[in-house]
Image 1 (cartoon, one colour):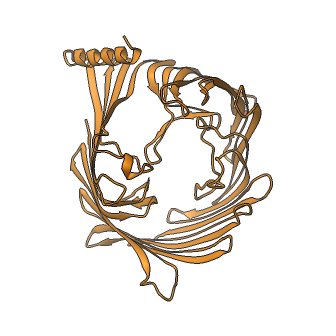
Image 2 (tube, helix red, strand yellow; image 1 turned 60 degrees about the vertical axis):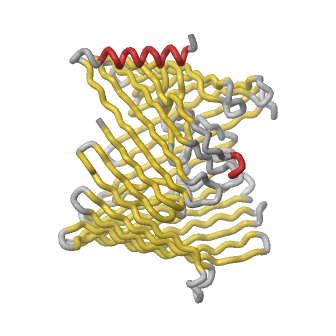
Image 3 (cartoon, helix red, strand yellow; image 1 turned 180 degrees about the horizontal axis):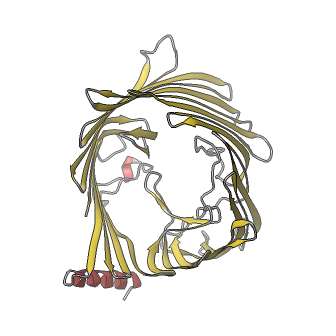
Length: 480
């Protein structure tokens, strides 16, 4: 019997038997989504459902997750290859876990990270359709301040959908001398090549952490070597560090990063900037970049906060450079809260003959309208761009209005984009309405109608990332 089929059968039996005994507890979540997309490269109607179940019996936990997409939509495929019959249903997660006072063993699907995630981070990000969760064995041991993580697992290959990559890893941390933590990590990956052979990637690193009342410090360094690769053997390095100093009402922070040939899907490298933007769209994050960050934060009392973050990044040849400035201030008055933001992002790519600068000032206003909480955000984005011999200016005003009732919140957002300030009528606009309601103590309903430009949005007190969208989206989330 196939191992995955056997594990699914075992979990189903385990869940069924649990219903007969009172010592078992069952919890879970069901996420259902209906989408109507008003786009040419769309099949218009889509349905998505994900059911996750968790079963606990004393120190044993079992879980499974099932996903159905009717049909499955791929925004990067042309309309000719999209069909209504492309139904997709699969087990997304299956595991059994035993937890003891000083240890935990998990077999099946799992997420994991070593240190700050630079050497390894296996996780799922729905917003970006990124999934590097592993399937195998995961062990955690702890004794006082000593912690050990070990794993041996597989994940689907990027070069062959029918094959698996193999990864093994160890992570150990302990207090050492005056450091709060000294850590060591090691991973070995066997990566499927396009010719069905395997290349080997070995990564090793260490980290230190120091925490005091006046300052704290974190640094991590790693090296990687890949051999038996089609393009030849190569080595890579990664260095990341952050330091904070606390002086009365001031917090002064600084950071440094240096990544060289350290681009791998199993790591999660800090961008070290306020906008969370990569250095360039044409190179992989971690391939070749260096950067610095400085931050000053001032909190004189519980009602006032001012923060300034500035960062710069560049590649080894200085042909790509980036700067990022973000300033925010917040003042809490008796009857309202006033916030001001200023963001400036600039990048230059000499090889592509590309330069652009984007400036976005914003005003935030929180107040009560007939006892109902209201959030108002206005911003006026400006982008100046030069691409080879072409120059253009883009204006992007935005207005957002959120209002909160008891179990209901409404959010209206309007965005414009036009090229000439003197002729705003010649523009592209996006307008959307989102309503969120708590139907019961365990059920949430969310409805969006209109258009979304895409990117990071914050509505009804929740921030998330979206792709460009036009149509209707209905989400029903039930927890039990």
